[in-house]
Image 1 (cartoon, rainbow, N blue to C red):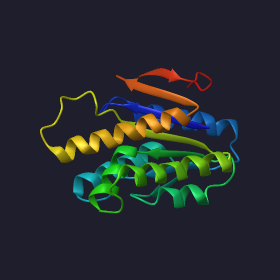
Image 2 (spheres, rainbow, N blue to C red; image 1 turned 180 degrees about the horizontal axis):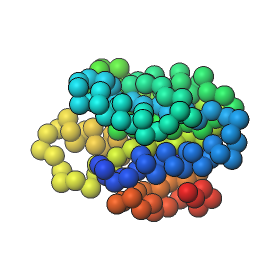
Image 3 (tube, helix red, strand yellow; image 1 turned 135 degrees about the horizontal axis):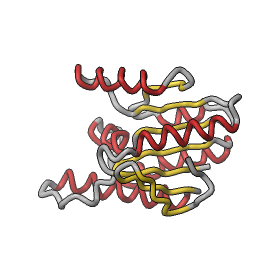
Image 4 (cartoon, rainbow, N blue to C red; image 1 turned 90 degrees about the vertical axis):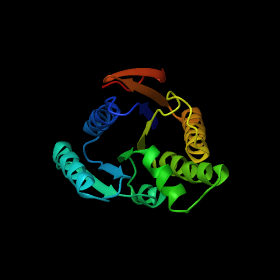
Length: 182
């Protein structure tokens, strides 16, 4: 099952995604509960945030730090695992700003690998991302290009997703699919 979860900064989307992943995991507790974190430990503030998030999550989570190699982690997952990717927004910026891939076709092809692998392996893959298209347009071409690429990915993933949820002020709004409720 592919579940896409979006929302603005500090909207509650990650908390919602974690609760949803835990509830899916409790249905099949023999499977792994995997957290794919795309943030990089770049400074003292980020180090503190990472430590706080690990403490909040608990020991049932298997946490992998994957700034770019998401497909490899999904490939290692076992049939039936619940995999939470948090977040697509940071993954895309890592891919672009580290010069790993730069055009839309390559980015979409990489995400398609995740979706194909998740379906083939029978995973529950939850993908968290930020809604950035609701902000005023940027005067910077690089920022605008990034936002357009992110929104292209959102649309591409949602077309293939079983469930699409947007979280605002901690309240989930289901845009697609209703079979998965927290």
